[in-house]
Image (cartoon, rainbow, N blue to C red):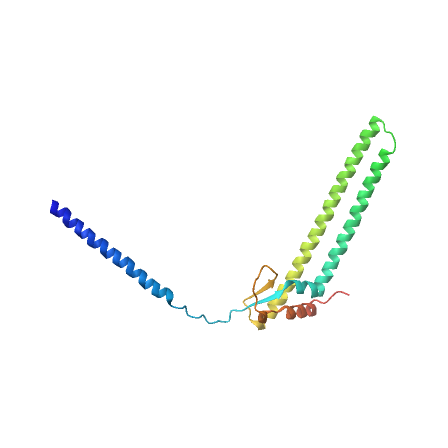
Length: 194
């Protein structure tokens, strides 16, 4: 029995030695593999073009036209809001300039609250209309850019075309800059409305 335990321990010791040997010899092979330089991958026609978004905004005539439309609507909304505030203030001044009975005071309070609610609703409606206009016009510009790029890319072979904005892409090879082509093509394809 003692001999069996001794033989079993000896076999286990040999197996542990073999495992140590295999474990450490495989790491030596890994280190040799890690020192081998990876093969250079060849460019298989994968190109990424980019355009500078701020230049498109500054020079795409239709975008400027849309921005002017948005600004005009925003200005119109601001005037209407100012007018509503003035009407509201006039109403308050009208009631505060004279003494009111209890019934007149309650009616005035109701009328002021009703006017306040009407103004709030109309202002929200104006803001929602302006946001909807901005969303619609932004989608329209993006759609026109995408439509142009699909046609443009038939001869250029880009896999992707990105819009460059600072702090989004940190390096760009200017040989892939298509901003001028994009602006010229967009202005030719979507001329300003007269």
